[in-house]
Length: 220
Image 1 (cartoon, rainbow, N blue to C red):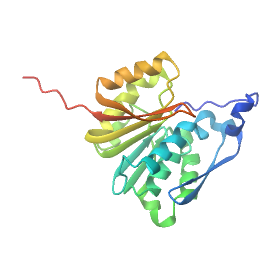
Image 2 (image 1 turned 90 degrees about the vertical axis):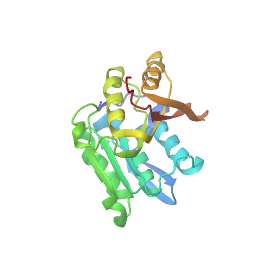
Image 3 (image 1 turned 30 degrees about the horizontal axis):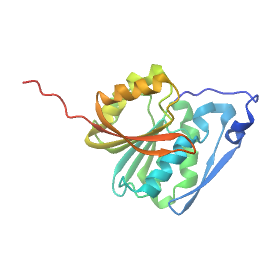
Image 4 (image 1 turned 45 degrees about the vertical axis):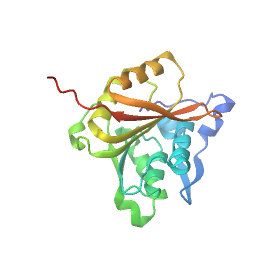
């Protein structure tokens, strides 16, 4: 996640990102997230991709979360991981780079009921680094919202997704397709995963892709 502060000279269309909080209703819970654009930039605001992902998880119902072990990559405010826990995931690991963890943990504590807090872990994860701290193929569901945007991170992001998932895991990515580099990432992803678009939010221009890891090659 790019932890980039921004100054106050922003376009009016982005003004909601500078609010100190954002509120939603998911899984019969009011979810209130603190935002801090000035301190942490893009990592500390709720982007449309996260909202669309949560709507997909709750309303479309094609992915079963109950009893599953999930991980969110580049979590930012933690909305997707929080909603995954509220929807019944057995264990949720919500990750981002170290500077965002205190902020992220506060949002988790604010929105996860006390009796469920033990099932949610906030953890540092820089893509491609320290992956041995996470069980190889140990997650049923890997979630990422608006994490496909820095081309330099694509190889390490793919490496991380491969490490965390098994051939029975489901990877869900919510993103805009803004530039050629985004299409290039999908091409890279398809070399290692079977990839299908499972949802498109026309109003917000958000795509959701489902990826399943390809079987390991066994040379004859």
